[in-house]
Image (cartoon, rainbow, N blue to C red; front, side, top):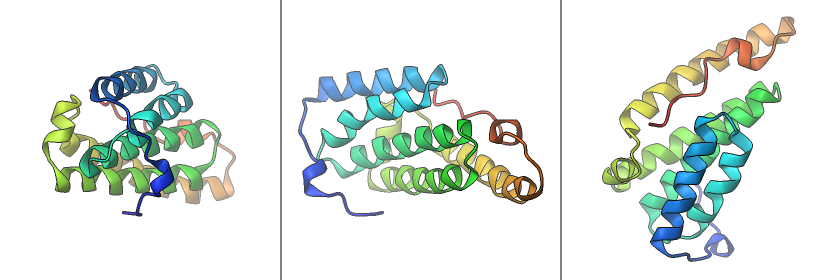
Length: 145
């Protein structure tokens, strides 16, 4: 996992981080992936707990992956899903309880991310010769809760 820059840390109280998480999850669940990304950033920047930061950063990258899917950018989607997987796995390794506290089954989410990664990687070949929208080729965004 890439080291966080010190300037990215802007502490906020736990209740505000939780509110940012809830707002981000709600935006994600309604398919507003860009908004989810934006809403989750304060939670990510607001904690010094590495497992919590990794969870939020993984969710941010997952949402960003689907921003790229909507825009038809398979490379951007792939890179962000790979980053999401890396951060979510790091959160689990550092503190397996963070996913549960957020109401997210990280084991299941990691499996779902793997399915989407396999799908989008095969879609890249298809897109090289056909003009089809990424969302037609990739499965729907994985459910968070």
